[in-house]
Image (cartoon, rainbow, N blue to C red):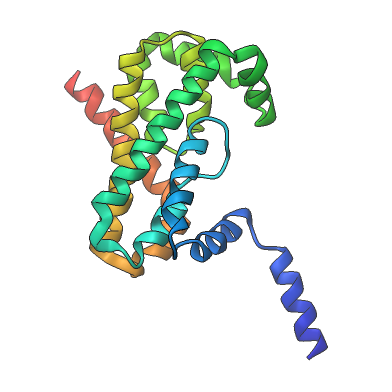
Length: 206
Protein backbone atom coordinates (compact mmCIF):
# COMPACT_ATOMS: atom_id res chain seq x y z
CA UNK A 1 0.00 0.00 0.00
CA UNK A 2 2.87 2.32 0.87
CA UNK A 3 4.58 1.53 -2.46
CA UNK A 4 1.33 2.25 -4.28
CA UNK A 5 1.10 5.66 -2.62
CA UNK A 6 4.72 6.45 -3.54
CA UNK A 7 4.12 5.49 -7.18
CA UNK A 8 0.92 7.52 -7.23
CA UNK A 9 2.76 10.57 -5.88
CA UNK A 10 5.55 10.13 -8.42
CA UNK A 11 3.07 9.92 -11.30
CA UNK A 12 1.32 13.06 -10.11
CA UNK A 13 4.63 14.95 -10.04
CA UNK A 14 5.34 13.88 -13.61
CA UNK A 15 2.13 15.31 -14.99
CA UNK A 16 2.74 17.54 -17.96
CA UNK A 17 1.63 21.14 -18.05
CA UNK A 18 -1.14 20.19 -20.48
CA UNK A 19 -2.46 17.47 -18.16
CA UNK A 20 -2.46 19.93 -15.26
CA UNK A 21 -4.26 22.44 -17.44
CA UNK A 22 -6.86 19.81 -18.37
CA UNK A 23 -7.42 18.98 -14.72
CA UNK A 24 -7.74 22.67 -13.87
CA UNK A 25 -10.16 23.21 -16.76
CA UNK A 26 -12.39 20.32 -15.70
CA UNK A 27 -12.61 21.75 -12.19
CA UNK A 28 -13.64 25.16 -13.54
CA UNK A 29 -16.31 24.14 -16.03
CA UNK A 30 -19.17 24.33 -13.57
CA UNK A 31 -20.64 27.30 -11.77
CA UNK A 32 -20.95 30.94 -12.68
CA UNK A 33 -17.19 31.47 -12.90
CA UNK A 34 -16.67 29.12 -15.86
CA UNK A 35 -17.52 31.83 -18.39
CA UNK A 36 -15.46 34.37 -16.45
CA UNK A 37 -12.37 32.14 -16.62
CA UNK A 38 -12.93 31.53 -20.33
CA UNK A 39 -13.04 35.27 -20.91
CA UNK A 40 -9.90 35.85 -18.82
CA UNK A 41 -7.90 33.12 -20.59
CA UNK A 42 -9.11 34.20 -24.04
CA UNK A 43 -8.10 37.81 -23.37
CA UNK A 44 -4.80 37.18 -21.60
CA UNK A 45 -3.48 34.50 -23.99
CA UNK A 46 -3.78 36.97 -26.87
CA UNK A 47 -1.65 39.62 -25.19
CA UNK A 48 0.59 38.45 -22.37
CA UNK A 49 -0.22 35.00 -20.94
CA UNK A 50 0.92 31.52 -21.99
CA UNK A 51 -2.13 29.31 -21.32
CA UNK A 52 -4.46 28.84 -24.34
CA UNK A 53 -8.24 29.05 -23.75
CA UNK A 54 -9.00 26.09 -26.05
CA UNK A 55 -8.68 23.50 -23.29
CA UNK A 56 -11.17 25.28 -21.04
CA UNK A 57 -13.49 25.84 -24.01
CA UNK A 58 -13.43 22.11 -24.79
CA UNK A 59 -14.08 21.21 -21.15
CA UNK A 60 -17.03 23.62 -20.92
CA UNK A 61 -18.58 22.26 -24.11
CA UNK A 62 -18.56 18.68 -22.82
CA UNK A 63 -21.80 19.48 -20.99
CA UNK A 64 -22.89 22.48 -23.07
CA UNK A 65 -22.63 21.34 -26.69
CA UNK A 66 -25.99 22.95 -27.52
CA UNK A 67 -24.42 26.36 -26.79
CA UNK A 68 -21.34 25.83 -28.94
CA UNK A 69 -21.98 28.92 -31.07
CA UNK A 70 -22.34 31.11 -27.97
CA UNK A 71 -19.13 29.92 -26.34
CA UNK A 72 -17.16 30.04 -29.58
CA UNK A 73 -18.34 33.62 -30.12
CA UNK A 74 -17.58 34.52 -26.50
CA UNK A 75 -14.02 33.20 -26.73
CA UNK A 76 -13.51 34.93 -30.08
CA UNK A 77 -14.66 38.34 -28.83
CA UNK A 78 -12.47 38.28 -25.73
CA UNK A 79 -9.49 36.93 -27.64
CA UNK A 80 -9.71 39.70 -30.23
CA UNK A 81 -10.03 42.26 -27.42
CA UNK A 82 -6.94 40.73 -25.86
CA UNK A 83 -5.21 40.98 -29.22
CA UNK A 84 -6.06 44.68 -29.35
CA UNK A 85 -4.56 45.06 -25.88
CA UNK A 86 -1.41 43.36 -27.16
CA UNK A 87 -1.41 45.75 -30.13
CA UNK A 88 -1.68 48.68 -27.68
CA UNK A 89 1.27 47.34 -25.68
CA UNK A 90 3.39 47.21 -28.82
CA UNK A 91 2.18 50.56 -30.12
CA UNK A 92 2.55 52.63 -26.94
CA UNK A 93 4.42 50.64 -24.30
CA UNK A 94 6.85 48.37 -26.16
CA UNK A 95 9.93 49.38 -24.15
CA UNK A 96 8.06 49.22 -20.84
CA UNK A 97 5.87 46.12 -21.33
CA UNK A 98 6.25 44.60 -24.81
CA UNK A 99 9.98 43.94 -24.77
CA UNK A 100 9.98 42.36 -21.27
CA UNK A 101 7.08 40.09 -22.26
CA UNK A 102 8.86 38.93 -25.40
CA UNK A 103 12.02 38.32 -23.36
CA UNK A 104 10.00 36.38 -20.77
CA UNK A 105 8.98 33.85 -23.43
CA UNK A 106 12.41 33.95 -25.15
CA UNK A 107 10.98 35.26 -28.41
CA UNK A 108 13.54 38.00 -29.10
CA UNK A 109 14.96 36.27 -32.17
CA UNK A 110 11.46 35.81 -33.56
CA UNK A 111 10.87 39.56 -33.91
CA UNK A 112 13.01 39.78 -37.07
CA UNK A 113 11.13 36.87 -38.61
CA UNK A 114 7.81 38.51 -37.72
CA UNK A 115 8.95 41.76 -39.35
CA UNK A 116 9.80 39.90 -42.56
CA UNK A 117 6.42 38.17 -42.56
CA UNK A 118 4.65 41.48 -42.04
CA UNK A 119 6.49 42.87 -45.05
CA UNK A 120 5.29 39.94 -47.17
CA UNK A 121 1.67 40.02 -46.02
CA UNK A 122 0.62 41.54 -42.71
CA UNK A 123 -2.97 40.34 -43.05
CA UNK A 124 -2.07 36.72 -43.77
CA UNK A 125 0.57 36.72 -41.03
CA UNK A 126 -1.88 37.92 -38.38
CA UNK A 127 -4.50 35.47 -39.61
CA UNK A 128 -2.10 32.51 -39.41
CA UNK A 129 -0.89 33.48 -35.95
CA UNK A 130 -4.49 33.82 -34.74
CA UNK A 131 -5.48 30.41 -36.06
CA UNK A 132 -2.43 28.23 -35.39
CA UNK A 133 -0.46 27.29 -32.23
CA UNK A 134 2.05 30.05 -33.14
CA UNK A 135 2.30 32.46 -30.14
CA UNK A 136 -0.43 34.93 -31.07
CA UNK A 137 0.75 37.39 -28.41
CA UNK A 138 4.09 37.81 -30.19
CA UNK A 139 2.25 38.94 -33.32
CA UNK A 140 -0.25 41.19 -31.56
CA UNK A 141 2.52 43.05 -29.72
CA UNK A 142 4.69 43.16 -32.85
CA UNK A 143 1.77 44.43 -34.95
CA UNK A 144 1.46 47.42 -32.64
CA UNK A 145 5.21 48.00 -32.59
CA UNK A 146 5.45 47.90 -36.41
CA UNK A 147 2.24 49.95 -36.68
CA UNK A 148 0.34 47.47 -38.83
CA UNK A 149 -2.97 48.86 -40.13
CA UNK A 150 -5.40 48.48 -37.24
CA UNK A 151 -8.40 47.58 -39.41
CA UNK A 152 -6.42 44.88 -41.20
CA UNK A 153 -5.24 43.62 -37.82
CA UNK A 154 -8.77 43.43 -36.39
CA UNK A 155 -10.22 41.72 -39.46
CA UNK A 156 -7.46 39.10 -39.62
CA UNK A 157 -7.75 38.49 -35.88
CA UNK A 158 -11.52 37.99 -36.02
CA UNK A 159 -11.19 35.55 -38.92
CA UNK A 160 -8.29 33.61 -37.41
CA UNK A 161 -9.55 33.42 -33.84
CA UNK A 162 -13.13 32.85 -34.99
CA UNK A 163 -12.20 29.97 -37.28
CA UNK A 164 -10.07 28.39 -34.54
CA UNK A 165 -12.68 28.54 -31.77
CA UNK A 166 -15.63 27.73 -34.03
CA UNK A 167 -13.78 24.72 -35.46
CA UNK A 168 -13.07 23.39 -31.97
CA UNK A 169 -16.64 24.08 -30.82
CA UNK A 170 -18.22 22.53 -33.90
CA UNK A 171 -16.08 19.44 -33.43
CA UNK A 172 -17.40 19.18 -29.87
CA UNK A 173 -20.96 19.70 -31.09
CA UNK A 174 -20.55 16.95 -33.66
CA UNK A 175 -18.81 14.33 -31.53
CA UNK A 176 -19.39 15.40 -27.94
CA UNK A 177 -17.37 14.01 -25.05
CA UNK A 178 -15.86 11.34 -27.31
CA UNK A 179 -13.85 14.04 -29.05
CA UNK A 180 -12.23 15.49 -25.94
CA UNK A 181 -9.26 13.16 -25.64
CA UNK A 182 -8.39 13.65 -29.32
CA UNK A 183 -8.75 17.43 -29.17
CA UNK A 184 -6.73 17.64 -25.96
CA UNK A 185 -3.97 15.52 -27.48
CA UNK A 186 -3.94 16.58 -31.12
CA UNK A 187 -5.31 20.15 -31.12
CA UNK A 188 -2.02 21.64 -32.31
CA UNK A 189 -1.69 18.97 -35.02
CA UNK A 190 -5.21 19.68 -36.29
CA UNK A 191 -4.41 23.40 -36.40
CA UNK A 192 -1.20 22.92 -38.36
CA UNK A 193 -2.83 20.58 -40.89
CA UNK A 194 -5.72 23.01 -41.38
CA UNK A 195 -3.41 25.98 -41.88
CA UNK A 196 -1.28 24.09 -44.42
CA UNK A 197 -4.45 23.46 -46.41
CA UNK A 198 -5.41 27.13 -46.15
CA UNK A 199 -1.97 28.25 -47.38
CA UNK A 200 -2.15 25.84 -50.32
CA UNK A 201 -5.59 27.14 -51.26
CA UNK A 202 -4.33 30.74 -50.92
CA UNK A 203 -1.44 30.20 -53.32
CA UNK A 204 -3.56 28.20 -55.76
CA UNK A 205 -6.17 30.96 -55.91
CA UNK A 206 -3.47 33.60 -56.14
